Length: 115
Picture 1 (cartoon, rainbow, N blue to C red):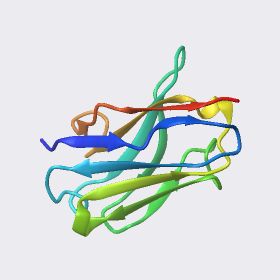
Picture 2: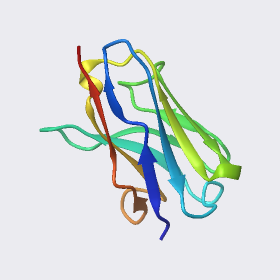
Picture 3: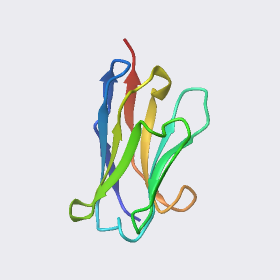
Picture 4: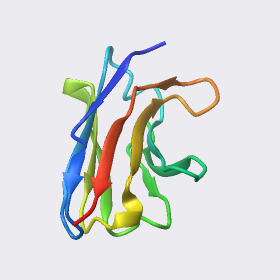
């Protein structure tokens, strides 16, 4: 298991930007798929984006063109740059390493988009 710590959440106005960070306790970024999920009240957990071990990225339909996932292997950190934020992006954002079934999860960071 690897420990993951997210940060960077907060309150932002619609149209604004935030960058989330996920720091891993050890160098796992080139060993496992790293993902961002989110959970909003009354909704199911949603895959936001992931980056594979070879750097391939993929995004949920609701965030394509607005969010960008990236990584810094030297810092054991995965980022989620979120632009053009909408109220419907409001959720608790979680970092995951190694998949949703057997992988590791962080504690989450809250993102609230509101005027």
